[in-house]
Each structure stands twice: as structure tokens, then as C-alpha cells.
Amino acid sequence: DAEITQSPRHKITETGRQVTLACHQTWNHNNMFWYRQDLGHGLRLIHYSYGVQDTNKGEVSDGYSVSRSNTEDLPLTLESAASSQTSVYFCASAGGSGRVGEQFFGPGTRLTVL
Amino acid sequence: KQEVTQIPAALSVPEGENLVLNCSFTDSAIYNLQWFRQDPGKGLTSLLLIQSSQREQTSGRLNASLDKSSGRSTLYIAASQPGDSATYLCAVSDRGSTLGRLYFGRGTQLTVWP
Image (cartoon, rainbow over all chains, first blue to last red; front, side, top):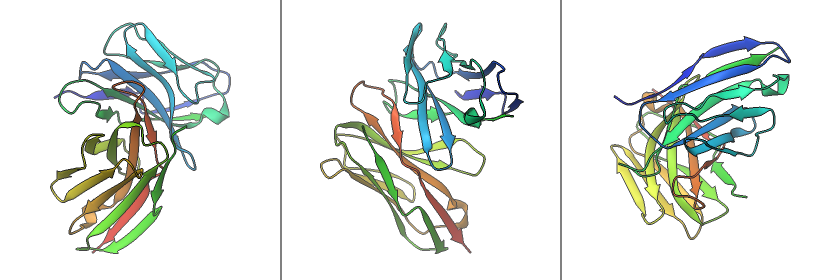
């Protein structure tokens, strides 16, 4: 069965370190998204991609970057981790077949920045 | 900017009750609306997807309706069960692109007690 996976599931890091969160999907979807979920804010969009070599900023993109070198993967990099980036991060993908536009989410990565 | 509101924020009901969760959005120019379920510490599971041209979708005991002109959607859960306890999230997709980003409400936390 097609799926979307994230790794690591839990990560503790220190302020100022570079951190990369992995996202891998086997749906063959062109569209991929990164969200963060925080109490009091709900889910907010960080970055998204509509295909290989395409990346776009979401509403809370400062301090984050993504790159898309193939269809399956969209890694999220925190350039210099800050305590404000402690959150749960979700990756999602969407495609054009079946239920068009339906987004599927990964299990999430809980990141703690000390 | 699209804003999505969910009412109530929390709901506690006895097993067997029929219940309605509400979702409203400020910009009616949406592409689709999606309802998700989120269990504690888990990712989001897609429940129902309604395209903007549709009025409702059904899956088992779940029925979701969409009134795009008034900016409202409802999720109806029939004969609720303790296993339905979770947070239910509503999200709308903007019409800027076919498979666009999602704007989320903050969710309704549902508890169904035996």
C-alpha cells in the first residue's frame, strides 16, 4: 500500500544546530507540503512543492528550507534551530488521481529544541 | 486570508448519540473541503473530501455537508461510539491551484463515554 513516512519520529536538538526532517511518500504525488502544529495555532503551512525542483514558502517559512530533487522526498531543514521551532511537524502529499486534491499526512515528527 | 473556525472546541457525549460538528470559513472561493480525524500523538487521517461542486459526502456513520455560499460545513456522526473519541479537524483548499495548500481550523475535541 502507498504511504507517507517521516523520520525521525522524535528529535531533541540544541539551539543553533542544523536539523533535517525527512519525508518520503510512495503515492507518486506531485504535491507535497510541510506543516507545523502548535497548541493555540493549529496547523500552519511552512513550505510546499508542486513538483521536482519547485518549492514555495508558506505562512511560517522563516528559518526553514526545503529542496525537491525527486518526486518521493521533501526534506525540511531548520538552518539554525531555535526554541520557537519546538513543535510537531507533519508532511503531507496530494495527487490528481482518485479523490482529486485529497491530502494524506505522515505520522509526524516531534521536535524539541533546547 | 482564509480563516477557518470550528465550533464547539470540545464536546462530550454519551455513547449512542447523534452529533454535529461545525466548520465555517471566510472565503467561499474554495476548491475542496476535507475533514480529518487526529488521535492523541498521531497523524491526521482523512475522513471525507467534498469538492466545491458537491453538497455532501458520506462514509459509513459519517456524513459531511458543504454550503459554499454561506461558508459552512457540518460533520454528522451517527450513533457515536467510544472509538470515535478524537480531535476532528476541518480544512479548506484554496482555489489558487488545483491541488493547493490547506487552511485548518483548530479542531473539535470529541469525547464519547460509555
